[in-house]
Length: 66
Image 1 (tube, one colour):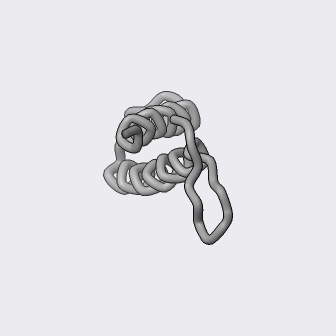
Image 2 (cartoon, rainbow, N blue to C red):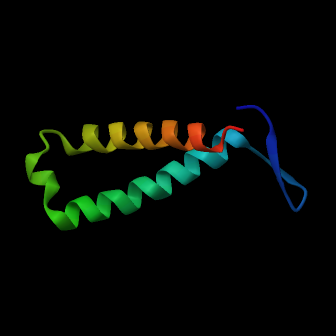
């Protein structure tokens, strides 16, 4: 992904935009998984959350890419 997004004269990197999208999705999904009790089956929650963020970031990059 190359390029920037122009928001009122402020140029934001597309990497930053996709990372923020993945972070918001990870927060929402983490709340849903916590509410459903899925973290009982997870050995290391911090490692699971990091992997979840990386997977969602890769999905956001694949989705935004033209």
